[in-house]
Image 1: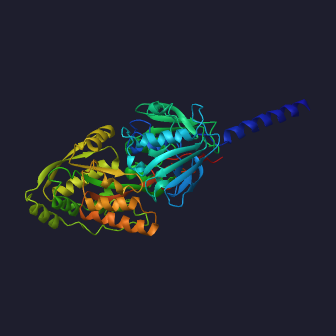
Image 2 (image 1 turned 90 degrees about the horizontal axis):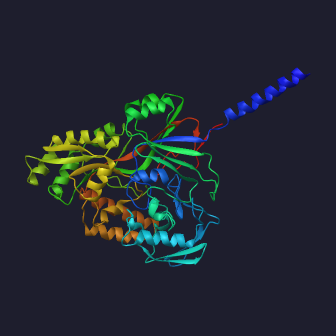
Length: 493
């Protein structure tokens, strides 16, 4: 009997051990292409910031869901005044920042006024231009008064640039971010990865993962072996090149081709010759063969665009036929512009594969019409400084992943250096219009103006090539906002 008891006891211990071993894992390694310059989404334009911290670490009054819908976040609900100019937000109860301080209406007021301030370094100050004032009614209630009704206001408050921060930690969020999300900052191994850990005092539903590491893997040469070996569990935007077919055939992985908000463009510096000349820009647009570019830069998965607008949006207008690929027409336009013998220019390319690979193809295409490009590879920090901030460039290739961002063409000091009063007037009217059908009409007008002006070479909508372990649940199929939201991700048991 003693022997039987011992055997039963041993079996029970073995069963417990096996159940523990078979329980769902709680760690996740996510591969991302670019290392962010810092970790404060309210103080920088780099999408790489939001791709780590949006919804995971920082939250706003609202948030953008996986299908692009506006959802409640730190605001449990809200009411809108009859004239559409005042939004009163009721904040959720018992929300804590990661340092233990309590969220209240004063933090909301501070965050919005900080973003609006003349000295603000927020990359999307236009999101807050309609705000007249912010009133704290009580610790859990805040009213935002607008200068005029704004149909996109709740959507704007869901951007990463509009997350709520605390005055006690706002100035140190670049290196040690403190938010209200279900994950808190763990570690930043510069040049390698950022690690987030579960925040146990989170106000909302518990997340399944205890630790998430965002590992920086800029190219296919490193991404493919990391994936195949299991060192990385998921690539929300996989850069795996020709290996995609091999991975799709491997039952260990799930491959999902979704959509992003990333308008991929050949940006032109409209503020300097010869790109200030409309006919030169039109010639370049005619010289571009989108089919070749899409095949080489996005494995054929990009969707062609003819203006700065996502094909997934119901206000999209297909303008891809405005400047069809026509080398002879391009040469004629160059000659009319006074550049019959062509000219030389530079093409600055940031690290993503779509830029580096697409740049080689575009340089070859423009060479056919006499434009000789010097390709200059730059790191992301260099691109932000030289191109985005200082406008020190001729041509560049980049994906603009902010949602519904056609309004950037109305900004006075934006790096395109584009200026069109008619376009500015459309955007101003759009900002003050709430009626969905009227907004759709205005979006169409805006698309046509910048397409007619050939402001940039409009190439394709960046596809979201998601590759992850087949046992993972909750990864986003599409990317309606520049984020890798892992708050709903879990492993199968």
